[in-house]
Length: 309
Image (cartoon, rainbow, N blue to C red; front, side):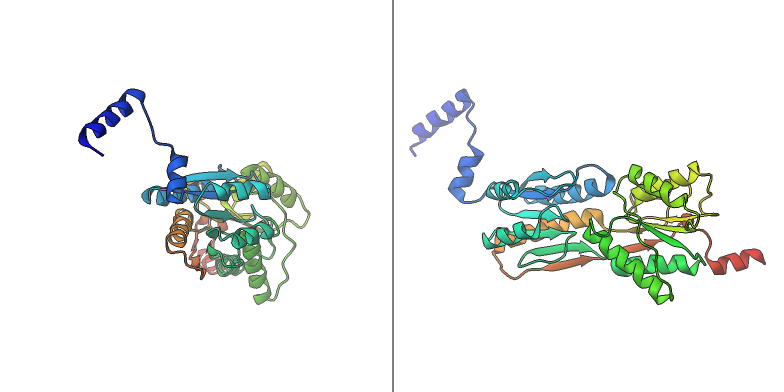
C-alpha cells in the first residue's frame, strides 16, 4: 500500500472509530483465541479458585475464556457443541457433561481436557488425588479411637467424592470394620447443616464425621453447636479442600489441602498444548493432596494417654 493511501486509511479509521471484527479475524486465521470451560457453579471458594487458576493461565497466553455454567445440571448437547464452535478447545469439569457428548466432541476432533473427572477416550485429564489421602484421613480418625465415623457427601454425584468414599471404605476395612452408609449432601454450608442435623440426631450418632468438603464441615459445626455438642470433645469433624476459612474456624478444621488454583492452571496449560501441537496421544495428570491436621479432630489416642498421666 502506498504511503499516502495508508495515511488516508489510518485517518478514516480514527474518524470512524473502526474496530476490527474479532469474529472476522477468527475466520480469516482459522482460530478464535478463546477457550471454553463447562463448569457446575461460579460461587464458593473451591469453584472460584479453580476458575481463577484457569483464567490466569489462559490470559497469560492471550486467550479469552467463555464459561458455560450448568448450576448443578447436565449441560445439553447443543449448548456444549455451540460452545465448541466458538472456541479453540474445551475443558469439561466433573459430571457437567455426559459421556456421550464427550465422545461426540472427540469424534469432531475438538481439543478436550477433562477436569476433576475420570479419563475417557482420547481427551487429556487433570485431577487431584483423592483415594489414598481419604484413606489416610480416615485411618487418622480411627487411630484417635473413634468407633463410629460418619461420611457426609454424595459419592454418586461427584467423581472426586466417589474416590474419597472409596478411601474411607478402604481405611475401615483395613481396620477390620464395615463403614456405615454415606449421608447424601450437596456441597454448600446449608447442605452440611441439614445433613449434620439429621446425622447428629440419631440415637447411634457418630463420634467423628468425615465431610466431603470444607463447606459441608462448616455446616456440621453449625449443627453441632445448635445441638450443644462440643467439637472436638464430643465430636470430631474433618473437611476437604483447605479453603482459606478452614484454619480460622472454631476449632480450626482438620482437612485435606488440594491444589485448587493449580487444577485450573494445569487444565488451561494442557488445553493450550493440545491446541497448539495437534497431538493425538492424551496426557493425564494427578496432582497431589496433603492431609492437614488441626484441632477439630481432637487429641490422638496416644496423646490422650500422655495427657492423663
